[in-house]
Length: 359
View 1 (spheres, rainbow, N blue to C red):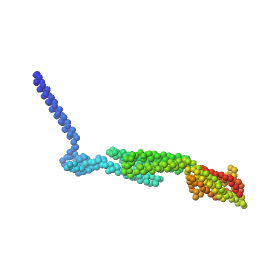
View 2: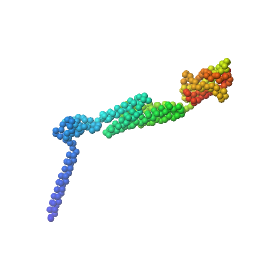
View 3: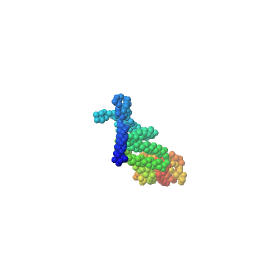
View 4: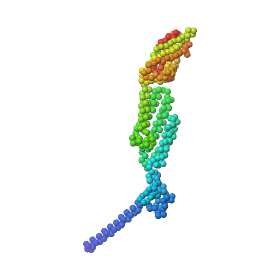
């Protein structure tokens, strides 16, 4: 076979191969284009008759084919054509978002009641409902700010429940030291709530106020002021009263026919030289012979002396001391002892004694 004839055969084979390959490539491209194209409406399909006909989808006829969740059916103009297609709804237009606002309003309303009437179980139910709506919305929307606020509402409820329990425990407690311990726990709880409020960024605070009409700035400032008041009160409670007592005058009285004596009055000078006032001051009076108490008058008070403020320097006058037990007080020398207390507490804040003569 000659060289020229061999070259001709090889060229013929190359041409055939190129034709075959070109044919394959063309077929593939056509198939892909057809697979990606939107189904065409059948010639006799009528959009809006309530029947899903050949080629109708939610994209070209949402009147007959329902839109997916969070999409609304709208009429749009595309060139010379008018189509009914699904358009994604704004977040605030969705039913779930409207439920969220409803649950929030119901939770807020529960908090508006008197403290002892608040139903915290009902509040927890509303928070769980809020959380479910946010979870549903999160599949299609950025609801991070809503999720953070709902989580805050849950933590705020826990704060309120624990705080209420501590207040009840403090009101039942009669031991002053234990009362102060519980009060300190309340302050720490409040600091935790303040930290949660401070965790919100300024942009988040603005958005939350816009959505829920909930001013985190204001609530944080109010709580911060309250914490300071509580801490100041606890610091004062941990300080001891510094009050000085002195018996400056007394007037004995005895009945000559029965040798029965009592004190017509006792005058006591009171000085508050400390940093805290004493509320509801009361006095105990003892008339003693050596170590034996002959008569006593307990929890004496005066409506005009309902507190001993810081810097006070005045006189308290008690009358008819020992009168009820005067049959046991014949004329003679005795010791008068006066104790100052707060209310009916047994704790003595200040004390004074003096020798007296009954005659």
